[in-house]
Amino acid sequence: MLEIKDICFERDNKKILNHINLVLDETKFYVITGPNGSGKSTLAKIITGILKPDQGQILFNGEDITSLSVDQRAKKGLAFAFQQPVRFKGLTVYDLLKIAVNKNIDKKDACNILSKVGLCANEYIDREINASLSGGELKRIEIATVIARNPKVAIFDEPEAGIDLWSFQNLIEVFKDLEKESQGITLVISHQERILRIADQIILLEKGQVKNIGNKNSMLKIILNEEKCCQKGNKINE
Amino acid sequence: MNDIDQKLLNKISDKNIRKAHAYNIRKNGKSIKRQISPYIDIISKEDNKGIDIYVKENTLIGIVHIPVIITESGLTDVVYNDFHIGKNSNVVILAGCGVHNDEHQDSEHDGIHRFYLEEDAKVKYIEKHYGEGIGNGKKILNPLTEIYMQPGSNMTMDTTQIKGVDQTTRKTKAILDGNATLIINEKILTSDSQNATTVFDVELNGTNASTHVVSRSVATENSYQEFVSNVIGNANCYAHVECDAILKDKGKVKAIPQIYAKNPDANLIHEAAIGKIAGEQLIKLMSLGLSEKEAEKLIIKGFLK
Image (tube, rainbow over all chains, first blue to last red; front, side):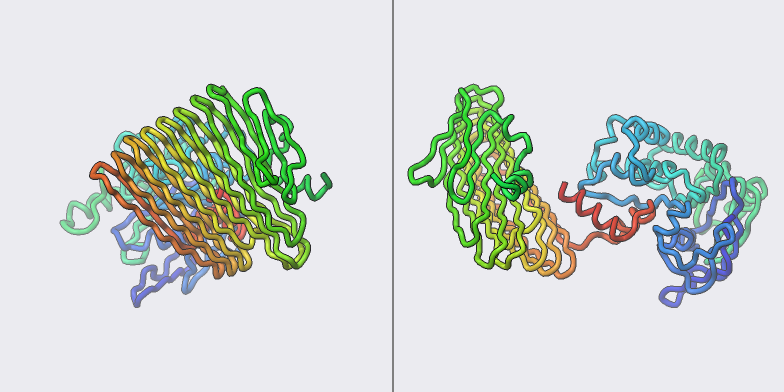
């Protein structure tokens, strides 16, 4: 269980997160949605330890992990797929997957992981993670590094961003499988209705606060209804 | 050869040196072991000032090792090695210099290597530099490489200097005829107060001549590196020079790129990037469970791979 207790985060006199409280249960699939600037990515970075909150606590299975570093949290089972995947000159896809799994897997195992995100493994396994890979390819490799860890808490920051329509269908299948098979908590930040429809629970953030939380049916009604009423703001992409 | 010699040799050369078709081991200014083959001949120059290596035309695959080891403090060893690579031959050459200096006097090796590639000859040249020893005498290496490439010839040069060399000035000069290709991959890591300068002068004189120079370097502690490249395009040719450097501690790197197109069809590109390890790279690897130190080590290892 992951508990987010009274988290506040302020920068440049702007309250980015304003007293966030959430309890996330094991085996459940959560989607956080909300307008741009509502604090979704900041919250994900605070959970994974990339950012430190000004106030509040993060409890994982009862243990206060607020002061733990990124790697200490990773060792406890938290994993994070970045919205903008990082490039590395000299490191290959195989190198990164070996680090993710934390053991010396053979290429066949690495290929199995890659095929889960729809990449034809033999073409990619020895490629460097550099500018020669497209944004969509990097994104899928990023997702693979999280799945490979079999984490207790998997957080994906806008996995659909930068992925083409063909790959998107594949991505939906990846998350459907995660929803079925994952024994841990899955938390996805997304604006995509098709990803929202996979969720057990949807969390709506607005102006740094939890505006609403509930099961997908009730939340989709609220969100889609709001969108119809509202001419401005961030649209949910169908 | 004693244990120190063998250790130096292992650092700069292949352990299976005796499997090479031809080899010449030079220690403290003298050749101490040599083997030749029916296709590859090695002949000493006068006064033991170096060797001439002759690779016969149409040699299918030849492997040549020419390591140099220096264990005598205060020695300045200047050696001239000339490689004559016959038409259509294909050869791999492993060279390198290992210096062990436990004393206070400087040890210096200046290797002057000249390559003469005939038409359609192909060379893979691998050079490693390594220094060790507890004395405060400097380990100085100043390699000069000159490459003359006839039409259709192809050369790949991989140079590595990873540890322990106090001072280096590496100069590489190349002149390329039509359809000749030169690829240079350079890797340097400096630490302490070491100083490394590399200078590339490449002239592309024939149609479709091309060169690709990639320099990856890491400057740590108080070390200083300088990368100078000067590529001249005299024909319809292509050049891509890439200088990437990572800074750590108080390391300093200066890149001076120069590309000069003297022909309207010359296509010359230079890229240079110098900076610390990107914070996001560290965070990504930490999010996979590595500590900051482990992440940094891995990024540098991959970068210099």
